[in-house]
Length: 229
Image (cartoon, rainbow, N blue to C red):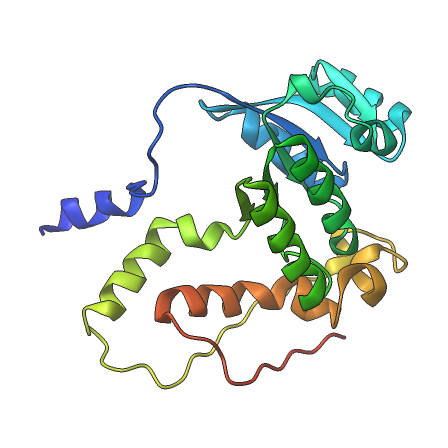
């Protein structure tokens, strides 16, 4: 492979199988990530569209729906009652971690595919319950670990599999951010172990290097340490 081919290969989407059609998404949870990142990103895609917004209050959902030109806005209770179920094909769950399960359970009852924000849930038991619910209902359940689809990460996995660096024996991953400069609220859910699960630094950022390492090496860590200041 020559240099131009090597560079171009980093944009390959070798995991993509569909080239036409549209998946209509119901977005559950309207925090800054959904509003500022997910909605604009979905608008720029060719295969997806946002058709329903879901928030704890219908008023909040309607306000953001008006701003983003989304046709339907409902409350969480409306969602659980099956309102607008004919208006979407899949559910994107972006609530605080400890509330993922209940929305996936409803999606399973409605026969809707699910893309669930990372981490899967607030603890292992609830994550396992979520997987069982999806399996029993026969619905696709995907966790939004984008590193699995990043061309550079997939290329790194190929190189490791080919033995380019020998047998890895240690991995050092570093991921940090000044959370309060992004969301100026010390009472936010990401700093609440009851809503985020376990240690907040691990559940918000630590999962990135852990999951990327698991994907590249095809093995699990023996121990993990994280800290928050």
